[in-house]
Image (tube, rainbow, N blue to C red):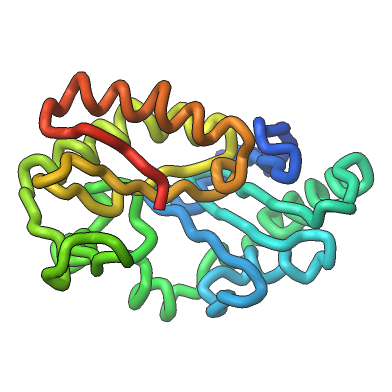
Amino acid sequence: MSQVEPVQVFAESTPNPTVIKLITNRALLPGYLLEMNRSNDQGLSPLGTKFLEFEEIVSVMVSNSFVSLTRQPQAEWSELIPVLRDFMSHYLQSDLPIVDQSLWEIHRTSWAIDLQAATTDSMASHEVHLSEGDPVGGTLPRNPHIDSKIEEILKDYIQPAVEQDGGAIQFKSFNPESGLVKVVLRGACNGCPSASLTLKAGIENLLRRMVPEVKEVIAD
């Protein structure tokens, strides 16, 4: 008779002092990331909602096998970590749901970070609406080949390193006229003091070497 491996949860600091990473030996959302706070909690993740019931926690990101938690500036991790770690361990040990399955089936493609996890319908989401200051035209002209190449590089070379720091990076758009790539930084990367340096010295340099059409990378 096989025995289920006990749930293990341990905390890890990140480069962002207001964010910690709770890592577990259980699969949570492989191929996806779900970020939420009190203002945009749609009930997609009962686990995330429970974390937000801690008044010191302001946002939650659930991904492959970890949860990133952002605290209030005045809170102290030394007091919070043991409580949060025990809570997550008991939650997972009780086999409570990570996501609400009925809602997740509707919205999950919006949270895919793995190309294989996204459905064909979700690919249309990469044709994003322009922000203020972009050329007029409604949506950016797309080059599926370059878009896919950029996404694969982010997934294979960048995302694993970013996950180590409790964050995530998502491709948003590529403008073939200006060579501008827009990405979205989430979790510990959002607001991290070293994020801008990493973006320019690491991510931008890598993409420019591997995709000659890329001239600049910015976080949107």
